[in-house]
Image 1 (cartoon, rainbow, N blue to C red):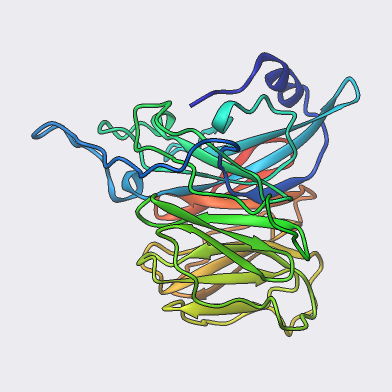
Image 2 (cartoon, rainbow, N blue to C red):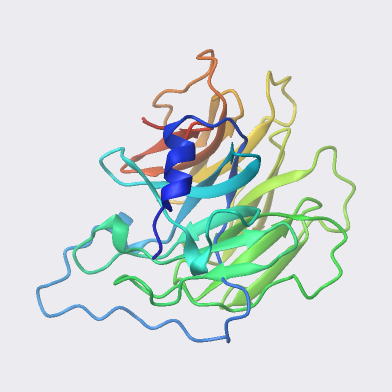
Amino acid sequence: MTFLTTRAARVLAAGATGLLTAVAVGAVGAAPASAVPLSCPAGGDSRSAADLRPEPGVVVTGVEDGERLYIPIAVDEGDSAYFFLPGGLDGTTAIVGAWENSTACNGDDLTRNGWAVTSRGAVYADGGAAAGARADYFGGANTLRLTRPIVGMSATVSGDGYWLVASDGGIFSYGDARFFGSTGNIRLNRPVVGMSGTPSGAGYWLVASDGGIFTYGDAVFRGSTGGLRLNQPIIGLLPTPSGGGYWLVARDGGVFTFGDAAFRGSLGGSGLTVNGIVPDGAGYALITDEGEAYGF
């Protein structure tokens, strides 16, 4: 895994302003490859259930010397934010989504390999750059004529594939990611802003900016904010580990819970701008446009 460049670190340390967008990570131009299962020595696998799962990142956008930078951020279980740049990215490529695969045998989050994707569907992948499970390249939508831009991504539970989602809800499946349906031919009230696969890998949720939820495969509808008047648009969805519910987060940090998702707190009314939600232990962390993580 490639970590934050000196230039990008200066931008974030200076609190450069920008928009935070949940994204998925991947690599352009790499040959398709099968993910290699991580082999731990006998008694040497100390990973938790969270360590074993692929996890989403959040992209923070900042400007330095007139140049816009795009830096994916994730959170370890100690509420500490860290940065990753998959597939040789230097922070200047306009990615819109990012994910990481499982950790190395010692459970260190910094050993995760990752993927990232651009709005044109180009995927950047780490492969086996770090000690964790491989994040291989399985294909991208950049060779297709897209009707709408790609806005997000979700890795499969195995890490052997991923889905890309466009703002019209069109779904593009790669590796072991199966297609279960899309809203590509439906007239939406608001654009789709993100997605997440189910814990089983046999389905996924799509979320629109009004909080409308669309379910496919074994993803269960637990409710939405589609009928509510929101102060700010919804920008992300995070399922619970069980898959029996999900959290939605709005740009102002408001959190909405459905199913078995427990409300643990929010940044609503704080004046902060939030554009991403990631797992954090049994709860969640909200990432601000300053690159700060707030765990709940």
